[in-house]
Amino acid sequence: MTQPPQPWARTTGFVYLLFFLTAICAGLLVKGLIVPTDAAATSHNLLAHERLLRSGFAVTLISTAFYVALTALFYNMFRPVNRTLSLLAAFLSLVGCGIQVVFAGLYTFGPPLVLGGDQYLTAFNP
Image (tube, rainbow, N blue to C red; front, top):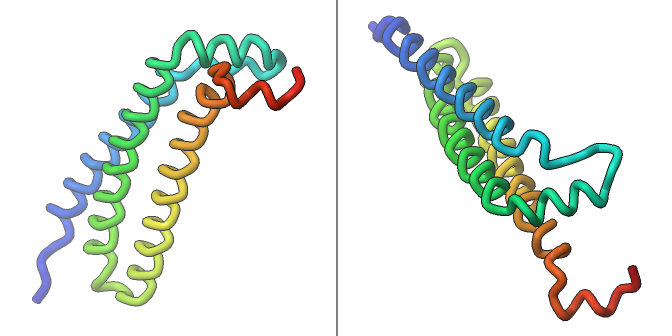
């Protein structure tokens, strides 16, 4: 006989809560840095608040770690129902987490690198 899912469900709910709290905090950290209608203001904000942008990325990494744990918990909870489907869902979720980390890193470290005014940027005309 298998274990009842109630302890796993409580743990999963708690990890889900931690995921949402950290994801909201990450969004609030970078809120206001991007001005949708003004590229110059956005670039100024990104350069002026680079530390805040990196802090948002760090919290995003923590949020993604919680989601990886959540994926493992969901796999463990749904494995008795259908092991193959649960494994597929876990695999796709982990691929999504990896894609999120890569693109969050690109969006965090790319703009300050391009807007930083380094010597290689003289090859481009304003």
